[in-house]
Length: 337
Image (tube, rainbow, N blue to C red; front, side):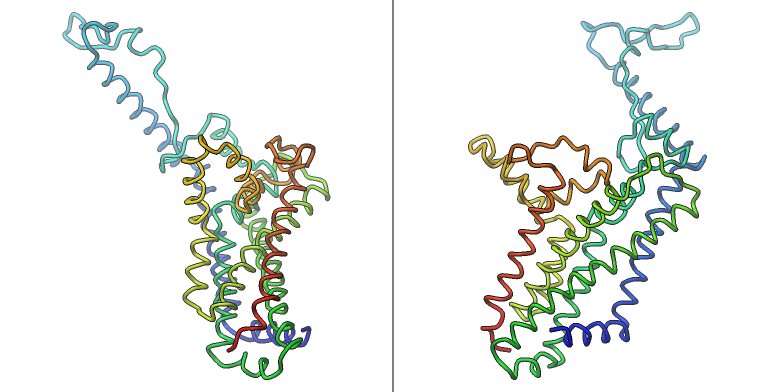
């Protein structure tokens, strides 16, 4: 198995796929960091002010159209100019948005203006984990590389032998998923640190080694889980197209959104579904979005009383990885090329 792993690493290092994917990761991180930096510029502040003024004008205009039986919405001055009354403007809720429709609280706006981020792992989470950008890249690389073994005929040489040799091939591909996940995660972390440092950002909260590396370990499990599920799909179907579609649907959270929607529909009739959703891998990945400090202090409910949130995340992701290994070991060696 280790000879196969060394061979795969050699092919990746001396090929274009790995380096092109890392370059895309760098562009992705720099692009997102640039958007966050833009939120601290005077131009963005002006956009926020104009959006707030526009929302207030819309709220005032809607008050003018109130029924006569409601509170007076406006008064006419001696000059004939209509002005809103105190009753009309009272309670007007002005929303501050970032231009894309996402609401921002005054505290969040001030934090951005001061170029502060909650914590280092929180920045990693928002850049690399939330949204599934990095998971999608790793999963696509896994799908393309594993499928290339069958397209080029490389797997036929391995499958000349039977039994243990075939099983070793499948297990090696899953180990490679873990290696790729570690490489892309560490690269993303370094790129995130560098991008925010160049943009002049600082971190408001300092993290202990346990909080930092504990979060990194759980994030690695999440990346590995996505890569392994994609790799298993390619190994069992021998199809690059299936692997690509699976990576796009699962890693980006599209499948999870469908499951959540269906669950919300049937949850009133089957309340147990609310607890079952918490044990889906996508729910555990979502918990990583708060970073190391937020993860340890999370008060999210768990299905098992007394189980800490990091322990639940590790258990769920570890179980998903174990299921991938068991499926590949049990079914894979029995398939013909």
